[in-house]
Length: 494
Image (cartoon, rainbow, N blue to C red; front, side, top):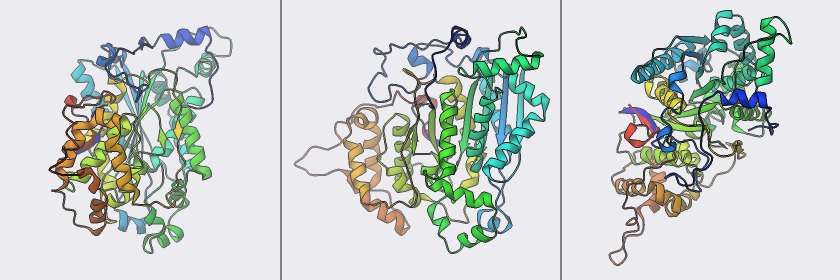
């Protein structure tokens, strides 16, 4: 079974105090999130600011589904390799119309289940190759050249972006530009939107009707290259010469993301911070056997924000549902979604799960409808971040940095003994422990990983109690926006 898993439990500079006009506009969103949620079942120190499903907050229609009449969907494709590289990575099949169409299907199916018929749904596939800056400018101009698209974008109640690989970075910059120029309405860009409306009406100072409420925006980024490609691709004696001498600058640019101190990474982080600060939700989905992008890059482990949800695509043909390593990675992503740091384990395990150069892991995730359905549910069924306005947390990262694999057992043991993990995921950890002995990896790299993961078995002695005996109750995390009963684990299989 293939699918997306890891979500079983589904900032920028300071902003000046909003004026009464802005507060009135923000209030039109129509949903009140209680500030005092001390008595809620989910109230714990960990994950206090994370989104909750409406049922937890006592709000029936937290995503204002009934108010959604118009939807706009932007599709943005990733990097298309040159002819020579296609012999290694395969033909590019992920196109913008494909992503937009998959998201359209997910939205329509969701609305049908809710008994809602949309007035209009517009797909806007944006295409154009090149470096990130060139693509952002080209896609932006192509969008503005279609007045019908611009009008539908302005009129939309909800905006989705579906993107892949390099397009994940491009889409973030594009969203930043659309927000800055007032083509997207958020709770913080009222003055810009007002200016755009006045200009369209014939001039500054003209009497105009109040703009619509802020739009709800969600970006689905599949196999995003947020922290660059797999490290060995840049040093491979087979791949590197082709990249350096035959590929375009767009391909070489991707490796600059392997260091968050690079100029291009800093620019990307600034754009992401701005877009998150304006209320946009992101769903980052990595592929377990991706032959181009490691898991830590696909889910962007270097950043943390309540509006980011992470998931893992698992190809059922490559991994069984009982595979220990895939289930461990799913659990680690669930912990990240619950606000618990994974101790660097995801980064350590990513290289070991990379697919072969002749594989298709980088191109299969976007063919599965589960990821698109997840993005729709995260937008409509989960609240915004709770408490004070959140800020983007960032940890410097470099793929070339030295990593000691002997940290793996210490990090694993640290998570097992963490009281937060015991409370939220105790049952899952115990179940995972029970599958360890039956895990028999074939490759030497995975065999070495298995040896380092031995601490999960715990110390076994007939004179000592089972170290996992305290994991006796179900521990479904209340911090993920989707409950386990609704089949949305942090990973998804098919």
